[in-house]
Length: 245
Image (cartoon, rainbow, N blue to C red; front, side, top):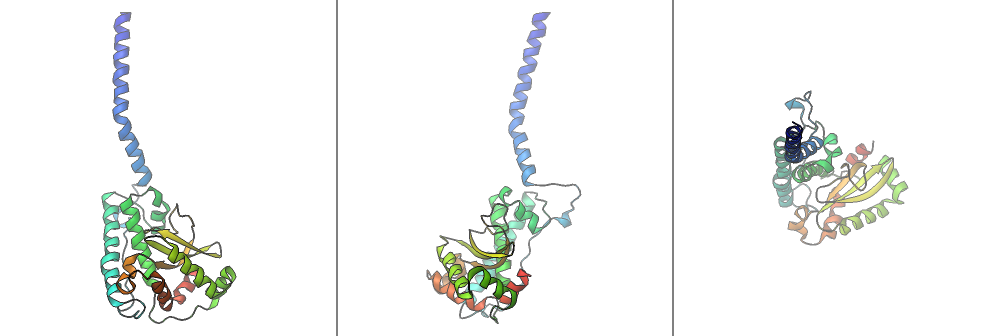
């Protein structure tokens, strides 16, 4: 009787161990999915975040001679449109239930590469287009004063910003960011931005320059410095002032 009981105990233990070994990866995967996907039964399909593309706000040729019409058209209708489609496809396929862009970027480090990269691309380009205008005015008011306090002068700010743009190896963005009232220049690789939870410099974006080659190569080829110099002529400083608040 004792031998039979011991045998059954060993057999049951082995079965239980095997079950845990099989279930372990599945449990880990489920836990990882839960970390990346904050599912709530209270969230409806209509409340789930869907990225949209902002209207360009000007004709494709309106920024010439600084940014040419063909570049703007391809940039907006091909590159930006693709980011919008791809991030929304990822949100659906991965069953993500974030309801705001802030919530989405607050979990950027937990997102799949497709969701993270395309979400960044969608948002960054919306922000970029709204930072441009064919009828620019010189920076004035609070933004001018804050730039002078943070960088010494507008010229010194432009010089440091240009250095960051030229120093960004490969593709990425350069940002003017408000960090607790202080303005800071930072750059991000690929389609990252300062709203990401794991950004090197986190803050409120005020101005952004796209330094991916698709933003300037048709007109400037490899002369990024000329693209940056021309871009200053179409910056929407009124919008930057509004973002500063």
